[in-house]
Length: 223
Image 1: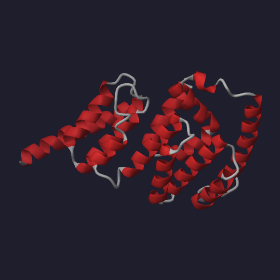
Image 2: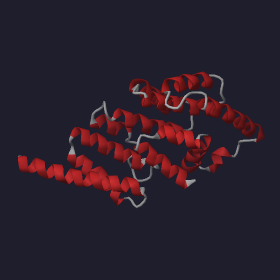
Image 3: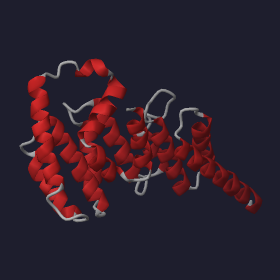
Image 4: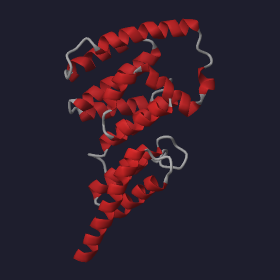
């Protein structure tokens, strides 16, 4: 289960969330929730709920297979239609996937709004809201300033959040865009100093750290 969760984080940072949801679907939702909020929250599921979820999962898979590969618009529309009558958990999956499809076709306004709605929705598990908030922050890097991005992920940029690695990379990317090399170096250092940072993220952090040192040195020489 931890391997799945690690891949969530790494795919987020490579902006490949669409493929990850397609591969893991409902399993990913359950895994994230179990890790973040614990198994106790799921003890109330009974046979009826499980059976219903299995049937809904089949329907969800059919929706994913109903359009041509790469036809993001058609899939987003199909997911929206499916979500209207789906069980709550699969409504969430469909909304999440539809938001990713909007992002994939360059409709960043729609994608950002959809992820923000999910991050604030009542009745949605906290793990999913957090995931949506991280995804929204990643999209917002190209349109918001550094302080705004820091505000978006402030609740995750700490030593205990399971989303801290993604949050710190997002801040570092926003800092690169702002040419704030001090902030780039600080976030990169947090990642390299954290023993739980995934290896791929650690490698990227080292590159960011070296870039920050190089750019800060060039700026100083120019001054």
